[in-house]
Length: 398
Image 1 (cartoon, helix red, strand yellow):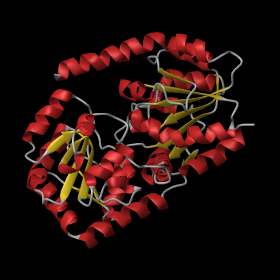
Image 2 (image 1 turned 180 degrees about the vertical axis):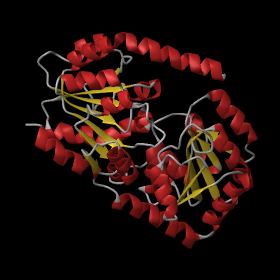
Image 3 (image 1 turned 30 degrees about the vertical axis):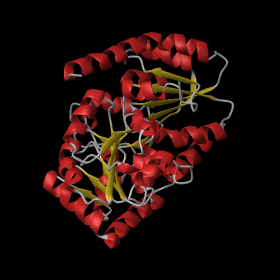
């Protein structure tokens, strides 16, 4: 599928999905219902919201949870999540849409996750005195709030009752423009991924595929990632196997990539038709398995940072104590910077650097185990953001 066709498909979902919003809300939210509203830009922000959603279900079991998404990639995957009573697109940020949406949801409490600052919605919530929190927030100096001409957007920030932030730099930026209602609580994703290790992560096909081999799981890869991985995949020792889970399931691109691999390769969709243990490369042509697949990894390559699409979740493999390799564009991901500083994560710029670090991790058991241990400790040490937010909520929700 070409770039234009992909854009048109996404735009169609973006436009058509917003047509049914108020009808869905009318069906699922009664005027007498009490609700909590979570707004997430996309899938990553939803994952950050999950621990708080789970906490709210325990804290306020009588409240319904409404989740809104800006992006089709979040909505389409999570529209049937059992965590929410209603999942919708957020209508475009106009005053009339905001008033109509807030009236339909009538929330007791609102969470905006990480970022997404829609002035009309924020002003509407402030006008109705509805407590509104930013959770797992991140701010950057280049944002409009910190520019001389950003007065209107700074006024929108004044609608938040409290900011729960991932790191100190964001705190300093907010304080520099007069906001002191801030807490550096950390990233709720640490809480989310730390629970994964307690779950049943068994996948029989992955067990059969891996056998006694060393397994490299390449998660959420884009073509740019696959291009730098290819040389190592093709030249790797016999005892190394690869599970590759592309970020987008596009059969033509998967087929094109498969043709460049000289190792014996099989798709997940035909795993039951073959003896999977005989293959060296397994390509996952479905969604929803990656967090469990990381439990089978000895090494993880996490995609997104070799191009400009954004680094995917490094905490999912880290929680299993797996050493991590990523691409070069990760400066806006504080968890990656911190984990690299600790020597649990390695960034590569090109094919040769990628092959070099994967070779070293595969060949040197002590180096691999030590690097993985750093990752596991990193996750354990940084849990607790959800509890800090819950402690605050209990003071404002009676």
